[in-house]
Image (cartoon, rainbow, N blue to C red):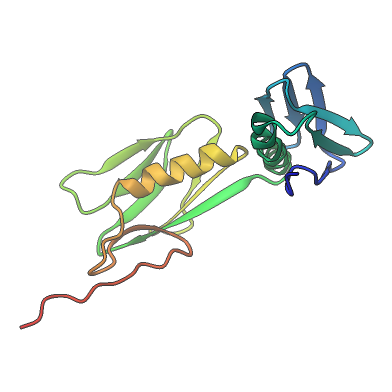
Length: 178
């Protein structure tokens, strides 16, 4: 049996959950998220807990059991606390500015500035010119937007210049020898 799937999910007091046939909706202080699920998985609310169970040990049921439990737990955490990804800009002249309306202005050493459009449900913050904080309630979209920003200028292994995650370690290579 799935080790993750059989753990019940605690529901915080400020979160409201609606389970309909084939979908689950989670509403909290930060917003609302909805997830569709296949009918081979049983999702039930017992008091202040959600239990995800499977009717049989078929391959599809085993695959989806832990997946839906993790997705529901991520939704509950997202609407109650939210998610953040922090990116660091490393390089001379590399700057970011989130105060440009619906755009994130990035100067990454190209001949032109890059205007990254803010997707719906995502917030950008720039505590200083070399730090970008991507936040939102959907874990998948926060991670996807952070990955797209990082892909604009990935860290290179010789000088370490580029956009990296907060705790990412860049393996450095030795340069040319004379």
